[in-house]
Length: 185
Image (cartoon, rainbow, N blue to C red; front, side, top):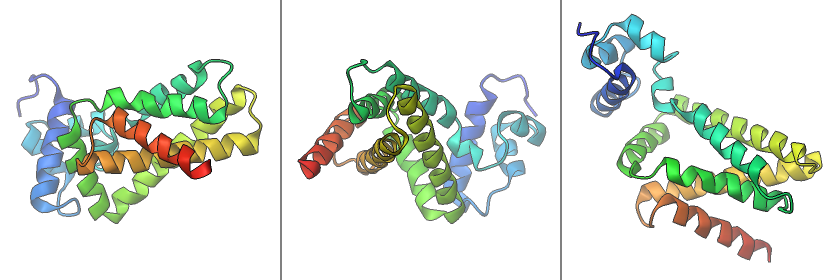
């Protein structure tokens, strides 16, 4: 095994994506991913808790970025404006990553276990948004409603963006936010 090559985590992610596409998620083992990446299974587990997490690496950092944007919204911003700031913060993260995101999303949609994991991550984001809004003085029920709407906007916009029918993710996020405003006007 060539252990000294740099970016083992990146190589593991690419190996997993390739194997999942070739053999399906269920038909792929951690040992196969590690072998394809040129590392040991032990090295795999230094970077990822399990084979699901290869697809969700970076989600904690994304959540932190989005929640920080909610917290940093102007003091005069209402709940939805603060959530919109958090949702829009995600746009830059995915710049130039549509193809990867499209492949990842296809795997998630095709695999119940991965869909479940995605829903858990989105629920955690809603909880974090709610806490950030409450820290801004927004009452709990209103904070929870705004947070859930924000997560739904992010999910719907992300799905539209990976379908490739619209421009960059930030543009799609803004468009989806505008659609919500139109629906509630």
